[in-house]
Length: 499
Image (cartoon, rainbow, N blue to C red; front, top):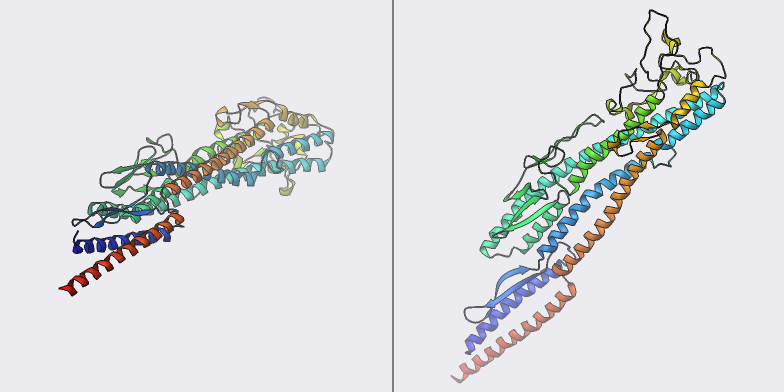
């Protein structure tokens, strides 16, 4: 080997070592960045035999990264459900909470039982009316909490749509830098890291399938196959509803013009917070609202009044059943079925005819006539026509309603038959079961996500100890190359001196 060749090789080695040291320094700087991967140089032999850097590469594990994306979307879906159901539970409590619908129902039963013992006592009647108000309030409060939950989900869906749109716009820019850099053999490693980070963030919103095409080009589809990103991001469309009630249906969430949830969705998604929020808003909340409405209807129906003292012929007997102790604005007769009472839990109230705070008479609970209070035909609906102070027949009938088996819509998930108390407890149990299940899924999902993230970091991330050791090795190699250059220089100087 000639001295000039040795000098050239040593000099190229210094350049390579300097570039490698810069990469190691970059790694050390990013040691605390969980999204950063380890960067390293791929080396080759130059045209004159020296060492040169062919490209800058990075540690990657696509299989683990896809597992991370899947785990992230799973946690995103169950976490929003668990958080929302926790808030519902905080508002209405569980089965044993003193102000839950189930507990309020027990309080009403006890108050009516006491009135049956002391039917002549106005304080006992007032206590029963107060318990009935508590019952109605508990249903009102629960219904309001459900609709607030739907409204909150709607707001979060709008925020998700905006965040996804922003991420997709950035992804378009970053992915273009990656593909162009790949074609020109530029260092694209930092852009790849950022691209992976964006994909990970997107997976929190919707379940994703990650595909790589030639030239390091990225394609994203939802877990149901809807294209989310291909060269450019697809449009995310969602319009939130200004207000929510039990009769309001939420707007569709669309990706690339395709609805992603519901019976009419051709390609429904299965993961991510968007899925969780839509399921919460359009299924879980509506089912629980249906249970509350069914309980409210059962109360109206159980305490309904019928004509007791028909007018003499030729008047036609009134066969209608009228709302008694429990009613709602605009309600006179009891609806034919609970299916016609969507939202009743939010509207149910104690009839004005027995509410002494608005001029009603609590003793009508004993005597009847609540449905036609202060009307010309009130007497036709009075059960205690003789005005006896010890009259208990009507009260006993009302108390018996609590042990009467009724039919409920089995598709609502709280059972098809049972007493009022059975159904109230089953409804609260259904909610608590969903909440506990979601909480357990979150706990498990977070553990799995943390383990996947740690494994991926161990395989592709920066290990500070290894990088420091590598830096020392490069420093020693740099010193050796520098010494070789110095030695070659001395030899050349010696040859020139001889000449």
